[in-house]
Amino acid sequence: FSDGLKILAVGTLVGRRTESGRLVSIESQRAFLSGLVRDLPPARWAGQIEGDLVLCAIKADGVVTLSGDRFFKRDVYLQQGKGIVCLASDLDLLPTNPAASGYDQSALAHTLTYYGHRPPKKHTIYNSVRRLSPGDIASVDQDGLHVANTPFDPVPTREYTEEDHGRYYEAFLDYLATAGSGGGNALFLSSGWDSTSI
Image 1 (tube, rainbow, N blue to C red):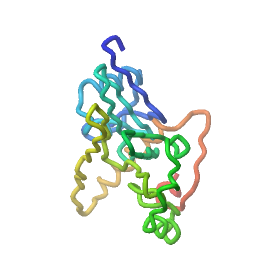
Image 2 (image 1 turned 90 degrees about the horizontal axis):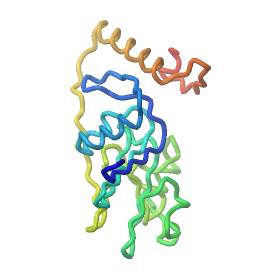
Image 3 (image 1 turned 45 degrees about the horizontal axis):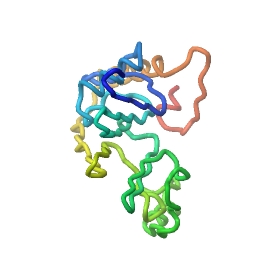
Image 4 (image 1 turned 30 degrees about the horizontal axis):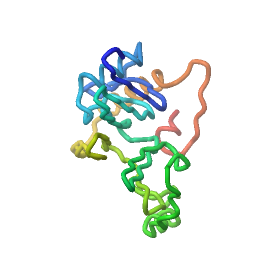
Protein backbone atom coordinates (compact mmCIF):
# COMPACT_ATOMS: atom_id res chain seq x y z
CA PHE A 1 0.00 0.00 0.00
CA SER A 2 1.13 3.58 -0.56
CA ASP A 3 1.60 4.25 3.18
CA GLY A 4 4.13 1.42 3.49
CA LEU A 5 1.73 -1.11 5.03
CA LYS A 6 2.24 -4.67 3.82
CA ILE A 7 -0.27 -7.46 4.44
CA LEU A 8 0.38 -11.15 3.95
CA ALA A 9 -2.54 -13.56 4.25
CA VAL A 10 -1.87 -17.29 4.17
CA GLY A 11 -4.80 -19.69 3.90
CA THR A 12 -8.41 -19.40 2.91
CA LEU A 13 -10.69 -16.49 3.76
CA VAL A 14 -14.28 -17.73 3.56
CA GLY A 15 -16.04 -14.60 4.78
CA ARG A 16 -16.42 -12.01 7.51
CA ARG A 17 -18.13 -12.50 10.86
CA THR A 18 -20.32 -9.59 11.93
CA GLU A 19 -20.64 -8.45 15.55
CA SER A 20 -23.82 -10.57 15.78
CA GLY A 21 -21.91 -13.63 14.57
CA ARG A 22 -23.47 -13.74 11.11
CA LEU A 23 -21.25 -14.84 8.22
CA VAL A 24 -21.21 -12.53 5.20
CA SER A 25 -19.39 -12.78 1.89
CA ILE A 26 -16.49 -10.49 1.04
CA GLU A 27 -16.36 -8.70 -2.30
CA SER A 28 -12.68 -7.72 -2.12
CA GLN A 29 -10.30 -9.60 0.18
CA ARG A 30 -7.70 -6.87 -0.26
CA ALA A 31 -10.10 -4.12 0.84
CA PHE A 32 -11.44 -6.20 3.72
CA LEU A 33 -8.00 -7.12 5.10
CA SER A 34 -6.56 -3.61 4.75
CA GLY A 35 -9.63 -2.18 6.49
CA LEU A 36 -9.35 -4.78 9.23
CA VAL A 37 -5.67 -3.99 9.89
CA ARG A 38 -6.17 -0.22 9.72
CA ASP A 39 -9.45 0.12 11.63
CA LEU A 40 -9.34 -2.53 14.36
CA PRO A 41 -6.81 -3.43 17.04
CA PRO A 42 -5.12 -6.82 16.46
CA ALA A 43 -7.10 -8.34 19.35
CA ARG A 44 -10.26 -7.99 17.22
CA TRP A 45 -8.91 -9.35 13.92
CA ALA A 46 -9.59 -13.03 14.66
CA GLY A 47 -13.25 -12.42 15.49
CA GLN A 48 -13.84 -10.97 12.02
CA ILE A 49 -12.10 -13.72 10.05
CA GLU A 50 -13.90 -16.88 8.97
CA GLY A 51 -11.70 -19.49 7.33
CA ASP A 52 -8.28 -20.94 8.00
CA LEU A 53 -6.19 -17.82 7.69
CA VAL A 54 -3.00 -16.44 9.17
CA LEU A 55 -2.79 -12.67 8.83
CA CYS A 56 0.54 -10.85 8.98
CA ALA A 57 0.73 -7.04 8.89
CA ILE A 58 4.02 -5.19 8.47
CA LYS A 59 3.77 -1.49 9.15
CA ALA A 60 6.05 1.16 7.65
CA ASP A 61 7.98 1.38 10.95
CA GLY A 62 8.89 -2.33 10.63
CA VAL A 63 6.60 -3.66 13.36
CA VAL A 64 5.24 -7.08 12.39
CA THR A 65 1.91 -8.27 13.83
CA LEU A 66 0.58 -11.77 13.27
CA SER A 67 -2.83 -13.23 14.12
CA GLY A 68 -4.95 -16.14 12.98
CA ASP A 69 -8.60 -16.98 12.59
CA ARG A 70 -10.73 -17.58 15.73
CA PHE A 71 -9.46 -21.15 16.08
CA PHE A 72 -5.93 -20.62 14.71
CA LYS A 73 -6.51 -23.55 12.35
CA ARG A 74 -3.15 -23.15 10.61
CA ASP A 75 -0.05 -23.84 12.65
CA VAL A 76 2.42 -21.04 13.31
CA TYR A 77 5.61 -22.22 14.99
CA LEU A 78 7.70 -19.98 17.20
CA GLN A 79 11.42 -20.38 17.87
CA GLN A 80 13.72 -17.91 19.62
CA GLY A 81 17.41 -17.87 20.35
CA LYS A 82 20.59 -15.78 20.20
CA GLY A 83 18.95 -12.60 18.92
CA ILE A 84 16.70 -14.46 16.48
CA VAL A 85 12.92 -14.64 16.49
CA CYS A 86 11.31 -16.92 13.92
CA LEU A 87 7.61 -17.37 13.21
CA ALA A 88 7.14 -20.10 10.60
CA SER A 89 4.36 -22.10 8.98
CA ASP A 90 6.47 -25.26 8.81
CA LEU A 91 9.09 -26.79 11.11
CA ASP A 92 11.47 -27.08 8.14
CA LEU A 93 11.60 -23.27 7.93
CA LEU A 94 13.02 -22.82 11.44
CA PRO A 95 16.64 -21.61 11.62
CA THR A 96 17.78 -24.16 14.22
CA ASN A 97 17.13 -27.90 14.21
CA PRO A 98 14.29 -28.26 16.76
CA ALA A 99 15.49 -31.70 17.87
CA ALA A 100 18.83 -30.24 19.05
CA SER A 101 17.14 -28.84 22.19
CA GLY A 102 15.57 -32.18 23.11
CA TYR A 103 12.01 -33.37 23.32
CA ASP A 104 9.13 -32.12 25.45
CA GLN A 105 8.22 -35.25 27.38
CA SER A 106 4.73 -34.03 28.38
CA ALA A 107 3.88 -33.18 24.78
CA LEU A 108 5.19 -36.56 23.61
CA ALA A 109 3.10 -38.36 26.23
CA HIS A 110 0.02 -36.43 25.13
CA THR A 111 0.72 -37.20 21.46
CA LEU A 112 1.05 -40.91 22.11
CA THR A 113 -1.91 -41.37 24.46
CA TYR A 114 -4.72 -39.01 23.44
CA TYR A 115 -7.08 -39.08 20.48
CA GLY A 116 -5.81 -36.87 17.66
CA HIS A 117 -2.15 -37.80 18.01
CA ARG A 118 -0.96 -34.22 18.44
CA PRO A 119 0.58 -32.28 21.30
CA PRO A 120 -1.55 -29.63 23.04
CA LYS A 121 -2.07 -26.53 20.86
CA LYS A 122 0.64 -24.29 22.38
CA HIS A 123 3.21 -27.08 22.34
CA THR A 124 5.21 -29.17 19.89
CA ILE A 125 7.23 -32.27 20.65
CA TYR A 126 10.37 -30.08 20.78
CA ASN A 127 11.56 -28.08 23.79
CA SER A 128 12.64 -25.09 21.67
CA VAL A 129 9.49 -24.70 19.57
CA ARG A 130 6.02 -23.54 20.56
CA ARG A 131 2.87 -22.90 18.53
CA LEU A 132 0.57 -19.92 18.59
CA SER A 133 -2.90 -20.79 19.84
CA PRO A 134 -6.41 -19.33 19.55
CA GLY A 135 -6.43 -15.74 20.77
CA ASP A 136 -2.66 -15.27 20.44
CA ILE A 137 -1.34 -12.16 18.75
CA ALA A 138 2.40 -12.09 18.05
CA SER A 139 4.25 -8.87 17.36
CA VAL A 140 7.90 -8.30 16.64
CA ASP A 141 9.52 -4.89 17.02
CA GLN A 142 12.96 -3.52 17.90
CA ASP A 143 12.50 -4.82 21.47
CA GLY A 144 11.88 -8.39 20.30
CA LEU A 145 8.88 -10.71 20.37
CA HIS A 146 5.69 -10.06 22.30
CA VAL A 147 2.85 -12.59 22.42
CA ALA A 148 -0.41 -11.30 23.84
CA ASN A 149 -3.49 -13.43 24.33
CA THR A 150 -7.04 -12.23 23.93
CA PRO A 151 -8.92 -13.41 27.02
CA PHE A 152 -11.37 -16.24 26.43
CA ASP A 153 -14.92 -14.97 26.79
CA PRO A 154 -17.21 -18.00 27.12
CA VAL A 155 -20.84 -17.78 26.10
CA PRO A 156 -23.07 -18.50 29.09
CA THR A 157 -24.81 -21.85 28.92
CA ARG A 158 -28.58 -22.13 28.93
CA GLU A 159 -31.36 -24.41 27.81
CA TYR A 160 -31.88 -24.19 24.05
CA THR A 161 -35.37 -23.79 22.63
CA GLU A 162 -36.78 -24.94 19.32
CA GLU A 163 -36.29 -21.37 18.06
CA ASP A 164 -32.57 -21.56 18.96
CA HIS A 165 -32.26 -24.81 16.99
CA GLY A 166 -33.96 -23.11 14.04
CA ARG A 167 -31.47 -20.21 14.18
CA TYR A 168 -28.58 -22.70 14.31
CA TYR A 169 -30.03 -24.53 11.31
CA GLU A 170 -30.26 -21.28 9.32
CA ALA A 171 -26.73 -20.20 10.34
CA PHE A 172 -25.39 -23.63 9.39
CA LEU A 173 -27.00 -23.49 5.93
CA ASP A 174 -25.73 -19.90 5.47
CA TYR A 175 -22.21 -21.12 6.24
CA LEU A 176 -22.49 -23.97 3.73
CA ALA A 177 -23.75 -21.58 1.06
CA THR A 178 -20.92 -19.11 1.73
CA ALA A 179 -18.07 -21.60 2.18
CA GLY A 180 -19.19 -24.27 -0.27
CA SER A 181 -18.68 -24.51 -3.98
CA GLY A 182 -21.40 -24.83 -6.62
CA GLY A 183 -19.03 -27.08 -8.56
CA GLY A 184 -18.95 -29.77 -5.87
CA ASN A 185 -17.63 -30.30 -2.37
CA ALA A 186 -15.83 -33.07 -0.52
CA LEU A 187 -17.07 -33.94 2.93
CA PHE A 188 -15.12 -36.15 5.33
CA LEU A 189 -17.58 -37.65 7.79
CA SER A 190 -16.59 -37.61 11.43
CA SER A 191 -19.95 -39.14 12.42
CA GLY A 192 -20.65 -36.00 14.41
CA TRP A 193 -23.97 -34.17 14.26
CA ASP A 194 -22.92 -31.66 11.59
CA SER A 195 -21.37 -34.01 9.07
CA THR A 196 -24.01 -36.70 9.56
CA SER A 197 -26.85 -34.20 9.07
CA ILE A 198 -25.34 -32.91 5.82
